[in-house]
Amino acid sequence: MHFLSDNSASVHPAVWDAMRAADASDTPYDGDALSASLDERMSDLFGRDCSALWVATGTAANCLALATMVQPHGAVVCHEEAHIEMDEGGAPGFYLHGAKLLLGQGEGAKLDVDGLRAVIDPIRDDVHQVQPHAISITQASEYGRAYRPAEIAAIRALADERGLNFHMDGARFANAAAFLGVSAAEAAGPVDALSFGFVKNGGMTAEAIVFFDPALADVAKYRRKRAGHLQSKGRFLAAQIHAMLDNDIWLHNARAANAAAAEIAGACGDRLMHPVEANELFVRCTAEEREALRQRGFGFYDWGADAARFVTAWNTREEDARALAQAISGL
Image (cartoon, rainbow, N blue to C red):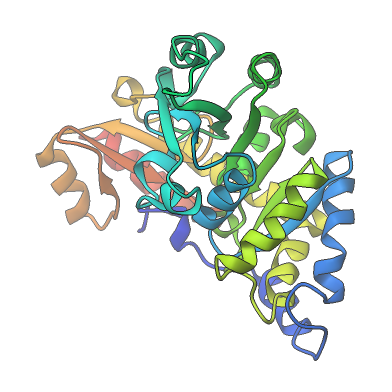
C-alpha cells in the first residue's frame, strides 16, 4: 500500500485514451491543433486571457516561468522550504543563470506579507545588493497548506507595491482548489504565471505553464526551446492536459485524493504536524512505529527523525486509506 508520493500514481484512463487518439500525424512541436487550442481552454478555465505552454516536468515549469521574470542579477523571494529551494537540484540557479533565491519564513511553508517584508525591506536599492524581481509561492504549500484568496491578494498588493512579478508553483494546485471549494481562478488569484500540475493528479508527462501576461509567454517559448523542452510530438503532452480538463477530471481526481487524506487524518489526532488541507499528511511517529507500519505493508517517506510523510493520490483505494488510518490509531 503505497503512500510514498502522488508522483507514482496511475495514469488516468482518460489520459491514455487521449494520447491514443492523438497518435496521428499532425504539425510537430507546438504547431498541432491540440497545442494551439490550449490557450483557449485555459482562458475559459480561469476566466481571463492567458497563454499556456506544455512541459514535461514541474521543475521545468517552475524554472522556465521564473526565467521570464527574473534577470541573472536579480532574485526570487520564496519560502525557505519551497520546492524550488529544497527539491529542484539547483535547477532555478541554472535556468535563471545564477539569479538567487531569497528565503523567507512562514508557518506551514506559506509566505505572508510580513514574512516577505522581512526579506525584502532590508535590501537597499543599491548596485551592490541583489534586488528581488519576483515572488514565488506554492499552492498547496510543501506542507499541504492552502493559500486563501485573500492571502494571495495581499501578496499581489505587495508585489505591485514593489514592482515584482508573482509566480505560483501549482504542483498540487488541484488539491488546493478542491479543499478550498473555489474556482481555478480564485485558487490562483492574480498571479502572473502558474505552474499547473497534472502529473501528480493523473497525468503522465505533462504540466502546463499558464501565463496571464502574454509578454511573458512570448519569452518562455524561446526559453523552452533553448532548455530542450520543446518536444517534437508535443501533441501528446497537450492531449494529456485537455483530457484532464475535460469533465473537470483534474478537480474530481483531487477531491478523491483529498478525501483519502482526510480519512487518514481523522485517525492521527495530535500526531499531525500540520492541518491537512490537501493530500499530504505529516505525522509524528517514532522510528519503531514507522518500522511497525512498514512491516504491515505501508510505503511512505521518513520526515526527519521523528515523523513520516504520507501522500494520497487520485486512485488511492478507500480500503487502503482506511487500513492506514486504523494502523496509525493503533500505534
